[in-house]
Structures are given as structure tokens and as C-alpha cells.
Image 1: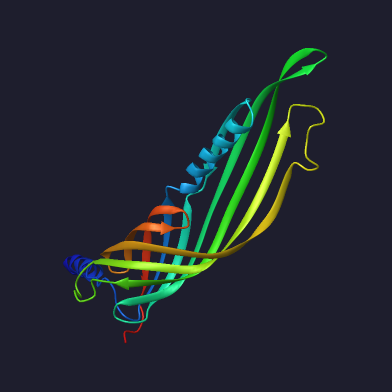
Image 2: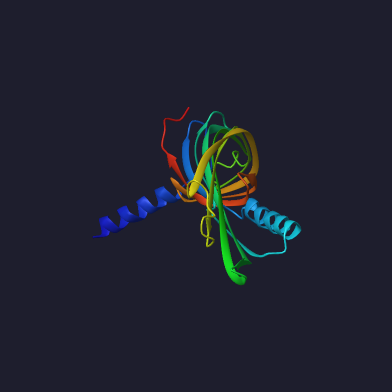
Length: 224
């Protein structure tokens, strides 16, 4: 029993001894980001548009996923890591317009609903510069990072109405809008409570989000 307890304490001590960043190591992490600025911007823009173009009553409802990203990085030197990043987010805007329509000289309440959707998938190259590499016993890894890559957008438009015969040829249109380059820059901090598992936070600008948080895993490799 004593040997078992000693073994457990030795294992805990080994796992707790962490070096924040090393050349040759591989890390994999997943982050969830927010708040998404496009959601607020879309709601404000739609309200301004409908207010300026007609006097109908309308409601705007925005739903969106947080910005999600996952990364794999390799320590190419004592201070620099380089890897790949994949990110995704989606936003939907539902606009409800209510108005009166004269049918046989009788005012009848009507409802139109417009559903607009945008999704974004981005793939890029990510690099980080790590500051705290001189302290080999530190569990804290502060860094500044940047990414460059390609992003692709998909759009969807849906429309329904209570007015008979007022409709689109199909309930929802989906189409690709192409894409283009994207850039990101963030300041981050990783903390490793145990040797191969850590917590990750970032602030900056990446795929529409200002703050990210997640978990990171180290893969043991042969040290150079």
C-alpha cells in the first residue's frame, strides 16, 4: 500500500513538472471565441436599412455560432512555433415584417419572413513567438501570434409569406460567394497545470472574435 501511494505521488509530481515551450514539441488545441462583431453589425445594419426604406413594423433576430478554431503547431526553434489553423463560424438573421394588406376592401394582417445565412470556413498558416522560454520550469507560456490564410463564404436566402402566391421559386437559395485572404493577430497565454494538458486564452482579432479560450494538448517528441 505504501509503495502504491509513493508511486501515485511520484506520478503526480512528474505530470506537474512542465516546461511551457520547447523546440521540437507538437501542440494541438481547440478554442471557442466571442463576441462575434458581425452579429451586432448585421443587426444594426438591417435595422437601419428597414427603417430608412419603409414604415412597416419589423423584428430582427440574430443567431450565430461562436468562432471555432483548431490548431496544430510545431516548435521550429527555442522561441517560435509554426503550424496550421482551421476556423469556422456561422450567422443567421431572421427578419419578420408585419403589415396590412387590403383584401376585398378589408385590411388583413400579413407576415413576411426573410432568413439570411452566412457561414465561413477558413484555413491558414499560424505562427507564434513565445516569450517565457528562458524559464525552463515555468508552467506559463505567453506568446504573440499571427495567421494568414484563405477564407470561403457560403450564403443562403429563405423567404416565406402569409400572402398567397407571394413566394420564391424555392424555399431556400444556397450559393457560394467565393473567398479571399484573411489575416489575424492575437496575444495569448497558455497555462499547463499538468505536463501535457493546458489551458489557452487569447485576445486580439481572429475570425471576427476578440477573445478565445480553450484547451491545449502536448504530444511528446524527441528533443533536439
